Image (cartoon, rainbow, N blue to C red; front, top):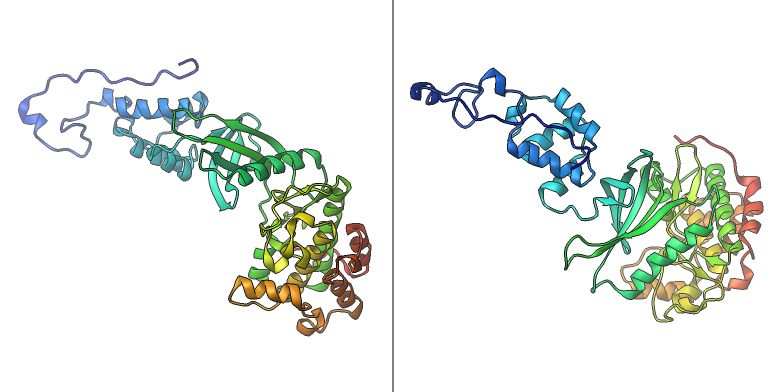
Length: 389
């Protein structure tokens, strides 16, 4: 293979006296003393493993050269991939996740386009999410991956393609940026295609986890974060796109205290009616009443409700409706009763902010603020730039 370095290769061992061959010393290979001349020779098993990593593009020839120069043990001890791989991980040439995938033979999808998978972040309704690195630019990204085989539901595939296309049209400081997308064919029959979407990596986590870790947020900070979220949402609405799943876990927080909207898998055009009216799409705790009845006729007001429910959660640590045991009970409350008032759980909230959230959560869509821009302007008096703790 072009570009593969010339590994030190083993030589035929010299014949040894029988008595010496049967004596055990600390440095032994195949029950014989290892001559000094062979201690820096890579055995066939080690060479084959490095060849494999080069073929999968998990290592470069330069990285292999550096490893052979910096090896933590004499080369003759690298008799198999498990031993050699452990030292590659210790020297940060390979990640533990990559090594486990290679050793288990699950290598399909470890390289997607120009991105090399480094680790797993999590999973969702539309595949797995990983940390990856561009092969040449060395930029780290979050990459969403969907295996596509004959069992993949058509609606999931449609939403994945939809998210690819939506993010390609949106360029805004408060919407996560998409860098690349594509499909990797299977190396063997019977294996799935791998669809992938490479996006901006936000290392700070989401607002749901932030509230879990820190409790209810100060009024000024919560309003500033939601002002930013409304700004990003306005960009989506300007492109005739409804998000349909605004919630704390879909708002990511950067190290610069900046909020970015993510997960447009449920987004659709204002004019589209392709959604199944019987399909419940979104998260009930942050879903508008009309979306719970018929997602196919959801308009932009549903996203305003999601903003209001998310702000309620940031300020109280709880969703607008109290938690119940069953989905049917949650839907009944959502469709037949009004949500709690913010000041019931957070008395220090200004009455004007309480009234704004009440409007955003109004069961009647036309009574909510008409635009995310309206919400942005209404939140401005309460918002301030508070550094993240």
